[in-house]
Image (cartoon, rainbow, N blue to C red; front, side):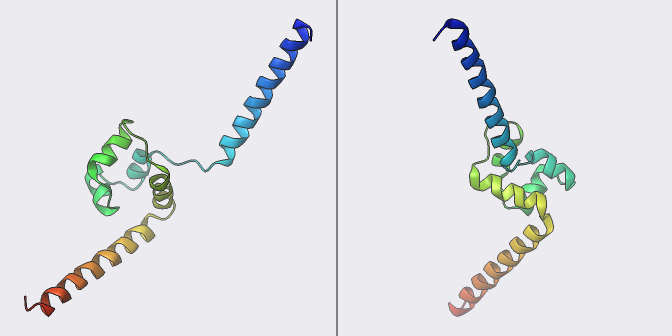
Length: 111
C-alpha cells in the first residue's frame, strides 16, 4: 500500500470510529448531574441525601467530581430525576414498615 493510500485509510478509520463513538454515546441514556437533579428539586445536599437515602459524603463526592456514581447509582439517579415523588413515597413506605416491624418485635419481647 502506498503512503497516500495508508493516510486515506487511516483518516477514514478515524472518521468511522468517531461516528460510531457518537452514535454509541447518543444511544446510552444520559444521567443528569446530581447537583442539577438536586437543585431542580430545590433541596439542600443534606435534604436530598436524607430524602433519597444517599450518604451525604457520597453525594458530596459525586457533586464535587471526586467520585462517579456506579452503574446502580446512575440508574437510581435516573429514576429520581424522572419520578422524584414516586421514589420518595416508596422509600417512606419502606421506612414506615421497618419502624412497624421494629415496634412489633419490641412488643413481642415485652419491651
